[in-house]
Image (cartoon, rainbow, N blue to C red; front, side, top):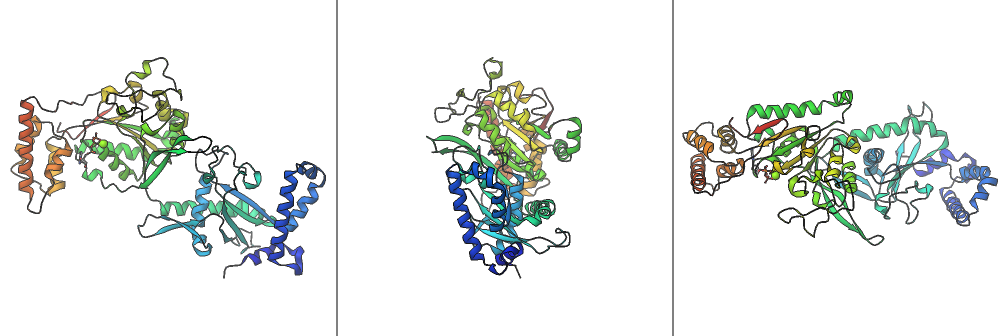
Length: 521
Ligand SMILES: Nc1ncnc2c1ncn2[C@@H]1O[C@H](COP(=O)(O)OP(=O)(O)OP(=O)(O)O)[C@@H](O)[C@H]1O
Ligand SMILES: [Mg+2]
């Protein structure tokens, strides 16, 4: 049976002998807290510390024999990134929480029907020291974990873990778990128990991991006059696209898959050559050629999370860096339509384009970056984001940029080392079409294949358009009718082209490793 708090108190306060009452202990603890707070308030604690500190500590140990370790949500006194230890303790305590806590917080788990539970503010749960951790003696001792956050205005107070530097009075972010234990278990707790908590917590996290699709949202905070900031918000990543359903030349597909596999296994290699464990992919080509589909396939293949950055919602280079630091490893960081998100046209050639957080970004041709957005992210900020000093923190990240207009991008942005692999996504040719016909209609061969292959050689049609034509629209549609529909669409496109209304957008080749997807040659 689970030991009660009375057992725990009895274990530590032999001094109290017959007076072993939880009520009396609590009363004295409260009194002590009040006295201590008042002494602090009167600034008498310096005097107190100097002259009677030693006795006071002894007295404190009698009144409250528990020591504590605080595991704060953010380390380093700032709010840069959630502390791993915090996440691990949270995961570890999930089981104890389900058993003991009265008020729980629930989040979705990997398994659609399950929930991962954690404590709400102010809850406490018990856990037990294993005999082997206590060196044979003291096994079965109960510890207490409390989940809380400091009261308003006391974030700097060391009794609450000294959570300074967060700024903005963002108390929501200053949560912590605190472990209470007796002095005689100090060694066992620090050397055996806490390491086990972290280990088991990590294992639970792996078991419960649900892949996430995150994006940055802009929030306005109304503390001290109000300011905008970006933070991540996420949903489960459930895109079904895989390389098995992505139409492209098999050799090119294999090349990309091999590249991803080599990257994933490359931890030691990257360390050996002294390079941050990350890789940049540039996907370029006309709309509808499968750039976003490729990203989903990559994420599914690697089993990574996806962070989709909307640059126009990022207000400064500093904010971009903060967002980056908050990403976890094993992730793909995506910036779609990079040419539209930022005015990068030759920007780096201008001498004054430095990482200046106060410099507003310019509007692009279609006015997308008008007055409603206030992004001050500069090209330099973006370059730093990709391969600056901060880019190495965390590791195992893939950065993907997509664009429809390769020629619009500054060469500095896409040079090797930043965007290591350039992949051109192009119009659908015969092999890609045959692949789509197999996937969409289950057809291996058909008399119309030759005609369609020839038409696709003359007309530029995206895989998205071909796929749409191959999708049955009603119960009466079959392979025959879908293929005939595609022939009709291609002939119309050919006619339009002859009349000068065709698609004149051609992908361009640039320096770098180029893989052409979806083409026959
Ligand atoms: N090569 C392909 N193989 C299979 N399906 C494809 C391929 N290319 C496009 N599609 C399908 O076409 C649709 C549009 O593709 P997608 O969104 O990936 O295009 P995109 O290149 O990202 O376009 P944009 O530049 O407008 O963002 C998706 O439903 C996708 O599944
Ligand atoms: Mg896209």
